[in-house]
Length: 231
Image 1 (cartoon, rainbow, N blue to C red):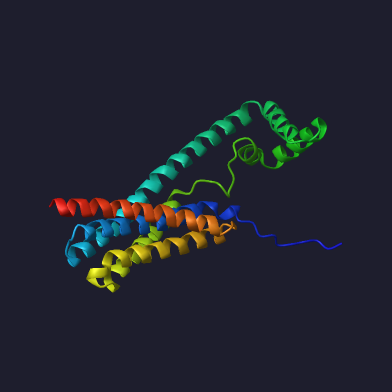
Image 2: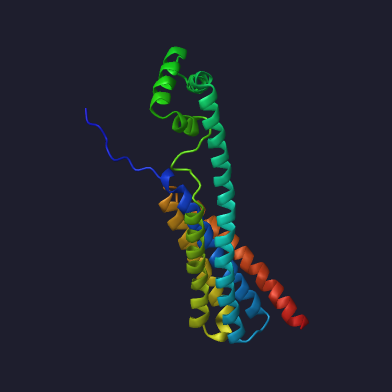
């Protein structure tokens, strides 16, 4: 009988993958929508380009700050829970062992075996066992504020740069359809790459990302054209 080794799982990518996909997706959609909206209002090429660059800088900084604050809040909650668990382990280790055994019993282990497993895990790393099995905190899912902030900022800027490049390459009279089409292609590619990196099927994520991107750009273009005519 042969044993399989080196199984490839994707859950360890969930932290940085979420931030990366969110950042790049937001970068493309928000910047392309800004560009399309301003261009639909019959602005000059210089104004359109400036709008895109301003959107890139402001958006990447906003994403970094937002991710850092959000994930830091998660990290603070995790630290508070771990501190509370550490005190409880020091005050009543016997009760904490029974609590852990009850968790394992709920997962299908017989009471005697559940208690034995709890005792062995408590002897090795009591806090780690409770963090993982009671609180759901592990190295895979642990909050990493700096990593999330940097990932979001970099991927947002990368995503935002793509519609700006489309502005530079497109002729003025075709700027809106060129930016629209190029951004949709970038979004579809992003959806496919994100799905592939996460081990998911490619088709649905690709269509989902492209649809919402198209909707955002269409609405912004309509508003820009409306205000352009009003002006």
